[in-house]
Image (tube, rainbow, N blue to C red; front, side, top):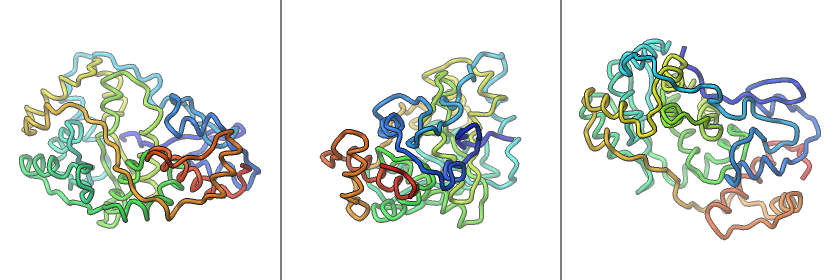
Length: 315
């Protein structure tokens, strides 16, 4: 079975997939290092925002060092896709080569989903181009600012950490739509950059699995399967994957499209702002809360939502 993108936490010698279940009603303290990491200010170390609790292992792909096995990439990917247990699956289709290749390999089994509703952020145009060329069904999920803001508290409960940008919330909205349509498996192209680049990726990937689980679907990432992750050659520019995309019929503008970092646009989060709580959290961290930039607004607002999810947290 393709590995699930879910974090494993450690708390007092016990391991589990949910931080809330592990800590229970214990008195808790805020962990400054974990907050800095969640705010995107430091590299991933495995620290959480709760003192004594950690993500294990801290690097999500640690120990999975790609090496060349001599087996063609297409053969490896086909073998992994064949092992996805559900006969009919949903596929998160964006505008990049990773999900486009999976769409080509799963075209007879998958219904593709993409986000729409935020101009300049979603990749609906690219997803439509891929779906039309490959003959795969595509369903657009309308998700504007109102939907993102309403979904934010649920996303923080699922992630069990603050965010510094609202991009992950889109994955929760997509997963909910997939579940509403009756699917229990969501295939994603996440992990390709890390596998081909040989990096550990201890940040975003576990959030993807947590958000899917919160929506009631299992998120599977073919690029992270050991059959592929331990056998492909290092290829940071993903040249072999881009070549395969062209062979499979993916439009050239998608197959050769450079990697583009995706950040959700600024949104009005006033409905979730708790000034007194933010001030208390700031005192505990030795810094003053700020909403001067979008990154700061998101970080401090979601830290407050995180604290509400753990009512025993001592700030």
